[in-house]
Image (tube, helix red, strand yellow):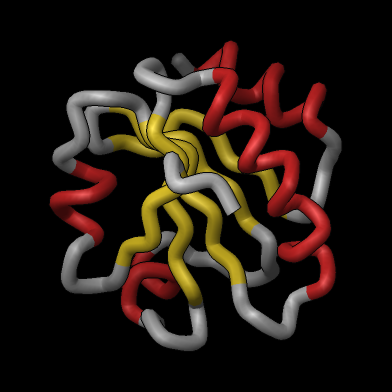
Length: 108
């Protein structure tokens, strides 16, 4: 996994995501989730591609249950783009790099 990807928690969510000066792509994931593992390499590529323009942050829903509940996450992976502390775009389920790229471009 890319060292450009940050792992956050319920406790650090405000600082890592909502207060970020840079737009954030947040990945709600779990260790047991196959589709979550499938998109991990895509997130690594996007972290390199958008370095300095977009932060990629992951939150494990098993270890952090307040944040997914706060944003109504029902299925994983759920990816949300935050800009200025607000959700600009949401994608539920594993998708290809081009679809994620389009979502990011529209949101930032």
